Length: 482
Ligand code: CS2
Image 1 (cartoon, rainbow, N blue to C red):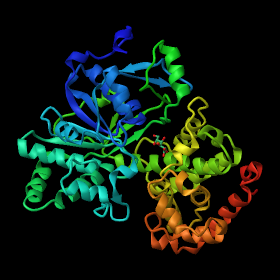
Image 2: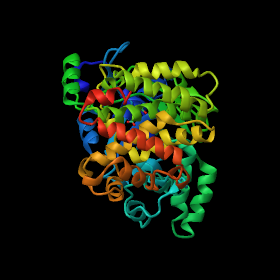
Image 3: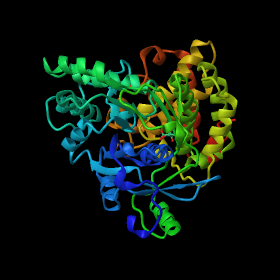
Image 4: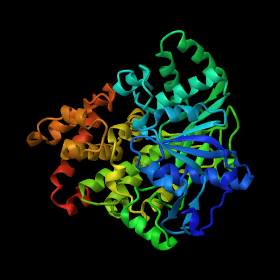
């Protein structure tokens, strides 16, 4: 790509590798890499080149290598900018194939920041205690001393190398949709360090306290999985083939807590907001946008809708999502200063309706066991605690349950697919009366007090029956039983 005469914004020979990014999926390329390129350009500060690490597969690293790390971001929808080539990635490595190299890069003195987009399941934590899952066999293997393959293992081993070599302080920035993602990441790294044998662990824990920072962030941009059609369209626009191209909506947002241990790019020059109130931004985003996204995904899947835009185009679904946001989620959160809740909800619905994005219900509906608790059960709990009826959030949870119960285990895209299916009755006896109690009893997702709430259970039974009765007729579900 570099040789085609297309404009590359940064002076590549001056870039230094200041950031290691774990989880080089489409989102990271369309969000973190773009903000960082813009920040380096605006401040003429080339020290924040990104070493990108793919986590589970080596595909993106293989695609980027022959293109010198260059790739295209093509915006889709109203207000889309022309396709741009992003030049902030200086190296792409496969964490699966080269775990020692990842540790070395995190341990290098030039590295000042590690950023993460590894999705919820990548943290391998127990959602109830917000601590590292020490029973996870991958974590155990990393603790036992193999070249680390988990993100927490790679970070902690990299930090251990820094402590040993005197490579200096560093900041670890989680960019995943988890509340308190910075504090959580710091806890998981410490849990890993604590589980190492003495005195290895004590030295490391002392070093961590003095040399690391874990700011929280809220990230936002809808980035679907790139399809062959997208690649063909980008090829047409640019006149060249880019296998690592990504498509994204025009909107992007990043709110960051300004606690860095060793400097940072001027991301504010690229439109990021530094705030002391990231927690409020994060809960607004998770419980309004992400919760509605999940709700539309599961309702859409039950009604045979392929994309989020198709699902939000169904009147009854759009109304249900709006009511969930306005009547249940908004009253149970505290908004950050400067955010208008009503406007935010309108904007979210407008973004979902983007017909050009092709964000699939299957993609957004994946990993439900990791998302439903944070996005929806929080609102169910808050609404019940306030003495109100979580009618619409319960609809979303029932739709998730229906998705789990009607999708064969092998097709259920969820790290706990096996455990979820083990909790369910045999497929021929899956009805509201058997599925709802079985999944309410699924402890990794539902806490006992909520599982025992009769009002919530009755709502789930009510909605599950409506969804199940209408599965053969889209029109029936599309009116949600009214
Ligand atoms: C989506 C998010 O896949 C999902 O679960 O809800 O990836 C969503 O598109 C982003 O958080 C938007 O910022």
